Length: 183
Image 1 (cartoon, rainbow, N blue to C red):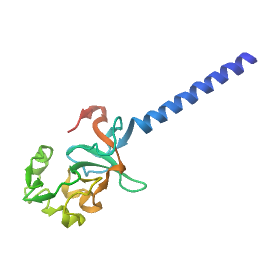
Image 2 (cartoon, one colour; image 1 turned 90 degrees about the horizontal axis):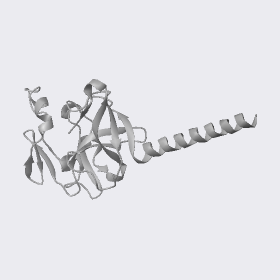
Image 3 (cartoon, rainbow, N blue to C red; image 1 turned 30 degrees about the vertical axis):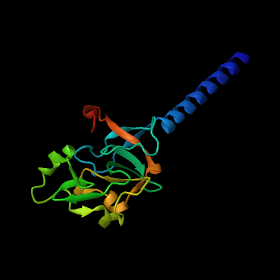
């Protein structure tokens, strides 16, 4: 009887340690996310499953063109591409991205642009027109979805406080047939 109680206690301790470790890894290091919708097409597809990398991530870490996950609302996380960093002046003109007056290539959009011969993928706008800020405020980033015609992003929600960013992501692990690293 004493042996079975001891064995049960050991199993309970092992299970508790496993749960604590799993929760710690998920909270501090990696977390799964499911892409919900088509706002990141063609780069990401609806229901792609990805890993959010939180290792070493801290406020101020996003780099231009990183794909990040952030708290958009209390109940909803968004996955978008970082376009503007603090101090950047953002403008789109004739389907070309200008950051601080300099044109930037967006090769991840090339495939999608050919599918819309009826007009630009990204309509003309300035950061000031969309957010009321001439430049991205300190401690914030400006994000856009790759599916510019059908994305709820910085043009609608404004700039994102960097403390709301959970981490960056670039590995699709499911479906297995689509296992890949995205840029």
